Every structure is written in C-alpha cells, then in structure tokens.
Amino acid sequence: MYYTILLICVTLAFADELDSSDNPDKYAIDGTVIPPDVITPEWLLSTKVLVNGGERLGFLRNDGSFHVSNVEPGSYVVEVINPNHIYEPARVDINSKGKFRARKLNYVQTNLVQHVPYPLKFKVRAPYKYFQVREAWRITDFLMNPMILMMVLPLLLIMILPKMMNAADPETQREMQQMQIPKYDVPELSEVMTSFFTGGKRAPSRNRAIKKRQ
Image 1 (tube, rainbow, N blue to C red):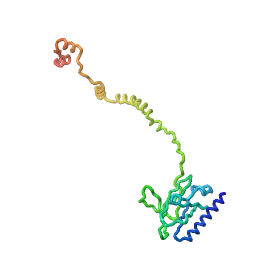
Image 2 (cartoon, one colour):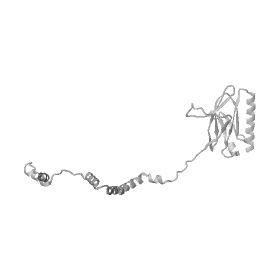
Image 3 (cartoon, helix red, strand yellow):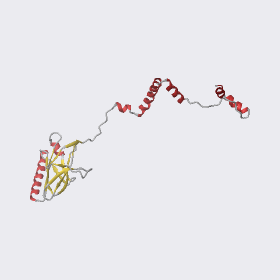
Image 4 (cartoon, rainbow, N blue to C red):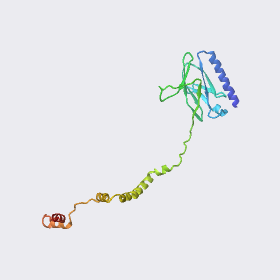
C-alpha cells in the first residue's frame, strides 16, 4: 500500500515537471522538510506541503524534498503540515523574470523582512501539545494559600510583638503603654452630686487642690 501511494506521488510530480517545462511562464517551488529524528514512511505520508492555504499541494519524496510545479509569478505562503510537529511557514516571492526570494512569514510585524535561503528548508520548531501538562505540587503553593496566611500571620505577630516589647528600653515601653491606654478627664461622682445639689456651683476638684498646695 505504501509503495503504491509513493508511486502515484512520484508520477504526479513527474507529470507536473513536464507541464512546467512545457510552459515557460510557470515555475516550481522546491524545498526540503527536515524530520525530527529519522525519515519514516509514516512521517512521509502524514507530512504535506500547502501553498496559499491549499491552493496547491505538495508531497514529500523519500529524502524529504518536495517540488510544487505550475506556479505563476507572485507571492506565495508555503506551509508544512504535520499532525505531530510544528514547522515555521515561509513566503516565496517569484518575479516575472523567474527570480525567487524567500523570507520568514511574520503576521505580527509585517514590515520586518528576514530572508531565508532558497530552496527552502523547514525545520521542526516545536511538537504539538494536545494535552495540558499537570503542574507539579510545590511547597510555595501551600504557603501562599490565603487561608494559611490568615492562620500563620496572626501567630507570628503574637510571638514577635512581645519579644520586641521586652527588647525595648523602659521609656519606650511607658510611651507605648500610654498610647495604648489613653487618659480621659472624667469628673468624680461626688463632684457631680455636689454641683447638682448646690445649684450648679462646682466644688474644686482634688487635683486642683493638690496643685495649689504644690
């Protein structure tokens, strides 16, 4: 079965070469596709060359080369399609005099021109990944969990703050205690009752009396 398909491909390629030689206005795009490891019959059958998204189709020879004939002057996008590996496409420009110029295909920066040698050579850029690889468990993921942080940070504060307080000098400790326990000027109950029964005349407080004595 494999040899039959290969014979058909060679026959079609030979017929295309004859047609292109008969018509001087038609040209052929040549190149080579480099396999990832070694050339196998399965890789040859599953790899195809597309010109302008399928307007023309090319098959690989036993050595990985291809020949797409009956191509008129113009600009063509040449792609290598393989179900297991990704190949970087290229653009081939053919002028009216039959001069070829190849460059990398860049859809993002169209003004950026990077020439490549002709005949084309396609190398494997990366393998296809049809499945997402499961991420490995890491200790940092466990420690950065919000629930773990909510439990660990208060414990650290409880353990560290007392040590910081003990390490501070006495004056600093007194200042921090005064900041934590504010003093309010609240009148005593006896003074409130005296001012109520005396008609609003408030007796001098003990603090004022002590200050006068001083």
